[in-house]
Image (cartoon, rainbow, N blue to C red; front, top):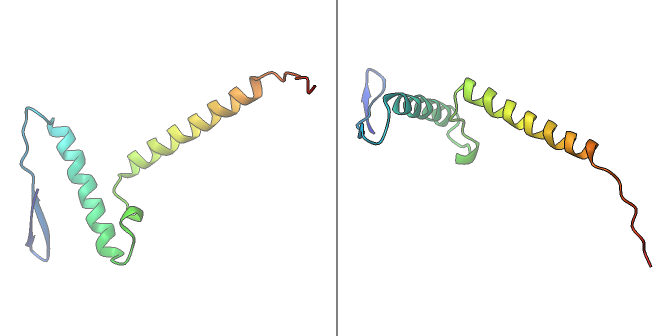
Length: 88
């Protein structure tokens, strides 16, 4: 990734091996990088781990996956059977 100042902002140029990456993958990385830079410049004192780098679509997908996982765990708990054990 090459970054330079241009017209009061930043311009990036992405060079990559087409044997290793699809154009769509590099486009997605460029979008994530732009989101990260925008958040970092808007919140210069933020911890790196708190900076946003995902698109809205990616955030919705991750939240959906998290909810599905939680629902699956809840279903497993509800369907488990209680078993008495002897203590002596």
